[in-house]
Every structure is written in C-alpha cells, then in structure tokens.
Amino acid sequence: MQFEIFTSSPARITVDCLVVGVHDGGELSAAAAAIDRQCNGALGRFLKRGDFPGRLAETLLLPAFPRLKATRLLLVGQGGKEVSRRSWRRALAAAVGALSRTKVASAAVALTRPEPRALDDYLFGRSAAETAHGALYRVNDLKSGTKAAAPALSRLVFGPVRPSGAAAARRGLVHGQASGQGARMMRDLANLPGNVCTPSYLAEQSTALAARFPSIRVRVLEEADIRAEKMGCFLAVTQGSDQPPKFIVIEYKASRGPRAPIVLVGKGITFDTGGISLKDPGAMDEMKFDMSGAAAVIATMSVVAELGLPLNVVGLVPTCENMPSGRAIKPGDIVTSAAGVTVEILNTDAEGRLILCDALHYARRFKPQAVVDLATLTGACVIALGMHHTGVMANDDDLARELVESGLRADDRAWQLPLTEEYGEQLKSNFADLANVAGRDGGAITAGAFLARFTKGLRWAHMDIAGSAYVGGGAKGSTGRPVALLTDFLLRRAASRR
Ligand code: BES
Ligand code: MN
Ligand code: ZN
Image (cartoon, rainbow, N blue to C red; front, side):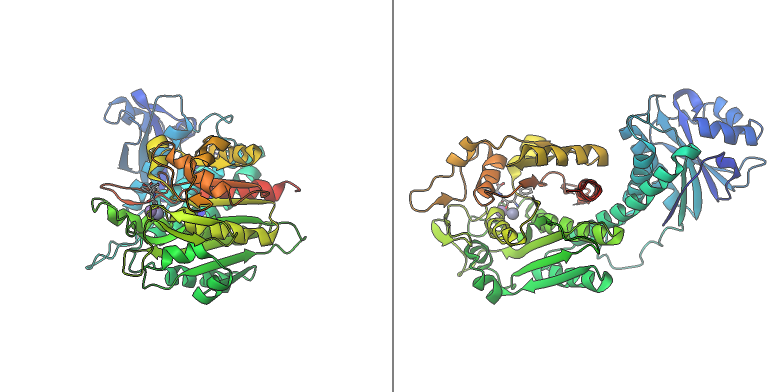
C-alpha cells in the first residue's frame, strides 16, 4: 500500500475516488468544500436533499460529479463537527473498509481532522497509515473454497495538511506504514491455530526475520540449551507437552554506537490448556492467543529493523505449550528457576509467569537500559481494565509513565496498576521461596509481583495484554496491540540520547 499526503485541493489529485467527510445535517468538511466548488456545487446540492445525513462511520459510494477527474465519490459520515481522535479513526476505518470492497485502486481522503492538539501533522500521518492497515486486514483463515479477491486499493492520499506540516506528516506515514505492517504480522501469527503455530513455527518465523534484515540475528535455544541455562520453571511448564520448547533470542543492532539495549520479552504459550489445573472448555480455543506477547515482540523487532532505528533491541521469546499429561507438572510440585529461586507450583494454569521469570533472568546478561515484558498473563487484568487498556506494572514509575504516554500518542492505550510491596507478600509458600499464585484478589498485580521478584536491579515494566491483544466471542481475532504503543516507545527512545 502506498501512502501520500495532499497539501492543496484534493480535487486536483488524479485518483479513482475522492473520499469526502460529511457532518450531521449534511455539512461538508473544509477539504470537501473545495471538491464541491470544483463540481459547481453539485455535491452540496445532493447533500441538501438529505439522503446522506452524515451519521458517524456510514458510507455512500456515488458516481462522479461533473468536472471531477475522479470517477467516484465516497461520502463518509463524521457525525458532529467536533471531531475527536476516536471518531476520526472510526470514520477513516469505515472509509478504507468501504473502498476495499470496490474496484477503486487509488483514493484521496478528505475527512475533517481532529484538532492539532489531539493529533498533530506527524501523528496524523502515522495514525492514518496505521488505521488504513488495520481496516485492510483480512484474517488468514483456513477456509476451503475460493478466497475473496484481494482489494484493488493500492494508493491512499491523506489530507489536508498545510505545506509547512507536510514533512512531519510524511515522516508519520513512514512510521505508520512500518507499525501497521508490524501489527498485521502480529495478527497473522496470533490468529493461527495452535496446531500450526507451534513453538517450532515461532522459531522458524523468527529465523525468517534474520534472512530478511541484515541488522537482525536470531538464535534458538533448544531443550538441552534451556536445561544448560537451568531454566527450571520454563522446563516445568513444557514437560507435559510433546512439542519441543524453544527459547528464541532476536537481536537487532543499529549500525551506529554501542548502547545498552532495550530487551522485550514475550510470553509464547502457543496453547494454554491450564495443564493439570485444566481450564473450562467454554472458551478454551481462545488460548491459542496465549502467544500474543511473543507475536508482539517478533512483529516489533521487524518494525525496528524496517525503520532502521538507531537503537539496540533484543527480543526474548520463551515458547512452549501448557498441556496435561502423565509427565506434566502437578499442583504442589517445586522447581528451581534460573535465578535459583524455588517455586511451588500451586496452580499449573499460572504458567506464564513461570516461563517469563526465567526469560527475565536471562535478560540480565544484556545489561539492558530497560526491560519490558508482554504477556496475556491474567484473566484478572481483563476483569480490571476490560479490553480498552493494557495493564502496566513496573518497578520504575518513569518507565511505566513512558509506556502509558506512548499508548496515548499511539492511540493504543495502557493504564498503570500499583505494584506496591504488599502484593508480593501474598506469594508466600510453606515449602518454597515463592508460590506461583496468591488467590483471586488483585490477580493481575500479584502476577506482576511474582515477576518483580526476578527483576530487582533492572529497569523493568510488565504489560498484561490479556484484554487488549485479541477479541474473544463472535468476531474472534488478534488486534495487533500493542505493536503501535511499542513502536512509539522505541521511536522516542531512539530519538533521545540515552
Ligand atoms: N493465559 C491465561 C490468562 C488469560 C485468561 C488470558 C483469559 C486471556 C484471557 C493465564 O495463563 C492464566 O491461566 N492465568 C490464570 C492465573 C490464575 C491461575 C492465578 C487466570 O487468569 O485465571
Ligand atoms: Mn494459564
Ligand atoms: Zn496462559
């Protein structure tokens, strides 16, 4: 998909379709008024008839009006004249979705923009590209029969942007193009079923990144290597599965300057049955998404390499299945983590923290400037925040704030939960240094507190994406979150001289 910016009248651009924002009562966006003038007011006269009242995210495709080069006009409802970032995104997604169901190959999109305070020219470009990518995403289903033809759409021109803001908006388009492709990669990985997307598959896909980008190196630790690293907690989770576990190390090195890397750690449970503490069957299929953290890390590494950010980034992906079997761990089993901490596994369904604690310990060897882990870690986080915010917990409030702010800029929001020491005290065990669960109360935070025991001395944040990374129920699927947030975070770290 090719993205461009327009700075003068959209009526002058040679495209198949002009996309025009219409507000309640048939009022035109400012850029659309220019199109109306070009066709001698024919558009305005049409809207006066009241056939298209401009309700948010409604669309209507019309044949071209006189004196316009484009052969079609797409009207898009934008609701009231106060355009919020959210309503703008919804209108844009509806417009791109509608275009993708036609034969239109190129379009100029002239919607009313939110206030510059809410969305400056740079973020306008980035968010437009990300939103368009999101709206064009088609799930990689395994349905037999003929596939719907790929959309004809290949060029989108967004505006209006003042000439003085064009460079910023174009930079935004480049970043949004990369981040949008990253989100698509994450969604493709996470949507695959557990029998296809195995730990070995994730290792192969990571290795493919190294072939695509000379700046990326990938190493895959096999079971024997994982044993040599003494990752007793990770090995405990995988021991009930017939799929071999993998510990994937993805290293991105910028051409310039040796700098302490940022380490991203992603939970890669390719299927979570709960193990002997078996889950209810109801929505168990959704546990194929339990590798969303891993998918987000792999995808974000590709964004970093695509943009060639002046930053060193390491992606760590511990990946295995959580299965019940005659060899599986049992409630009460005690194992020793790579850090030497003994853990009593009271609930085999709290497996994410077990694979993450060994990966977080492994992160130390990189002497990182920051460590961020991403995990569909707890149902309790979904109860606390729903799907709208990712939960952030950290041992460093500045890092937590940085991530929350990146979420705001990227429109991929996150909310900090308090990780004070009381929560850690709930993880006491009679028989080991630590229990892996602490009851229902504050479940998202006690999971964070478990991880905090392994990150002392590191600047670390944990992002619980159980609610944000995928949608359950009817229209099931990965959302691609939080790739946009992470892209913003890494772009800002790359820009600051740390
Ligand atoms: N993968 C799940 C968390 C999850 C639940 C993600 C629902 C998305 C939707 C995790 O491994 C898990 O099972 N957590 C348990 C922890 C409990 C046993 C302390 C949970 O949340 O129930
Ligand atoms: Mn589980
Ligand atoms: Zn899990």
